[in-house]
Image (cartoon, rainbow, N blue to C red):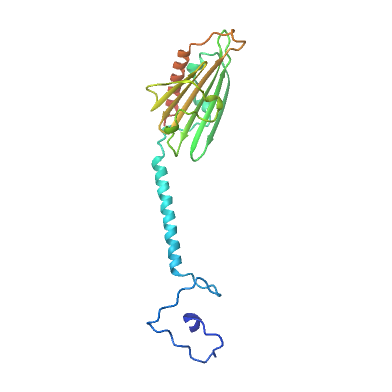
Length: 237
């Protein structure tokens, strides 16, 4: 049972138990300022508690604003993620130009911000045809719009970043498509919503520089565009 001194305050030290308590302060006297602490672990002033509630409310409101902005800036993704991109990208047009396919190397990764899938395909060459290496990658950007950085390179394979190359627009492919060209190395990149597709083709002579004919670069580019169109159609949701 809680006694009266516990409800109203402590008895002054040294006062006999039967002696009456001192009179309460008059109504006109200002109340004593609240203490932040007491030897007995007094209660936290209500203003402090209210201040903490206000700060927590402001922080929570900021979190909601950031979440709303992130969701508002997240681009729509119209394509599905493929764990084995080599199965989804046969590259029939390019494969027909360089002999039989002698290797496929898939990779993939997933994260809250981005999913990506990669495939490298090699062809054997022969009969005076060069050997080819094709690299294709699909990036699905789930939080930030890739448009502002489109065309700067995917960043996973240093060999997929042509430097000092000519760049031309490719109409009729996604929202925006770029063909970047260096000698013996064209690269096609396509932006469509939150997805970025990258396809690179390289060729080289198998038995020395004079053992194979130089391919028709325009024919290689046309094959890249058609294979890219087919890949995008396969991955479209």
